[in-house]
Image 1 (tube, rainbow, N blue to C red):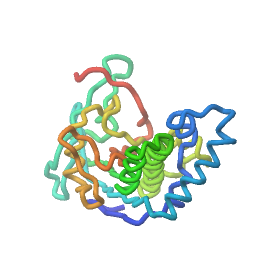
Image 2: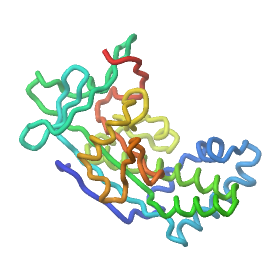
Image 3: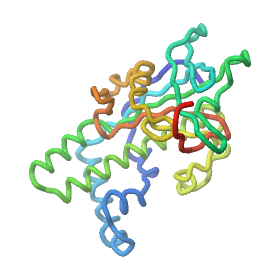
Length: 253
């Protein structure tokens, strides 16, 4: 769709709230069981979403972009518009089975053709983190835990929402499932890999994504430990290959 990066600010809650993984929120973050999800979980979720909206605690923003690239063995080499190397990522390869590596999903350098890789950083902003800190200081621990868990899941919902937009821009959204459950099971073409997961475990690679996307333009910064701040932010490498999916990689070959 374009080369380089774009910044999008002012994304409304209604645009990505429908991508919220309620199972991860209610069971994983809030610790509710099946019996209390309907009686307690959903009413409290509605209350929190109304509060977030009316108090303007969310500042959803995205920076994303597309870059030419090639692969060479275990490396993904990101190129500028002239074909010169901007940066490269070295990924671990499985020690058994298909011996997969993230670089396998891109055209090899020796093909003489370039490929495309996407990157994205999304955030719901710093205000909601400031509110969770206030609740913690006020010893309002239940409210703190609920709002913190919800804000983390809303950042994930924003990332899923934007990944769907990226698939549309790349022309590969035709395989998208009709229901959210299918989306959350990644029943679509391509994959969104966040740093720190088995296929791309090196958090220091976040500095390379930051170099490409300049996420400070949406208020996201890297700590010395390569953590994203605000906490309610995520980054990702977006792969379009039909066989791309999540896998565990043990050692570097």
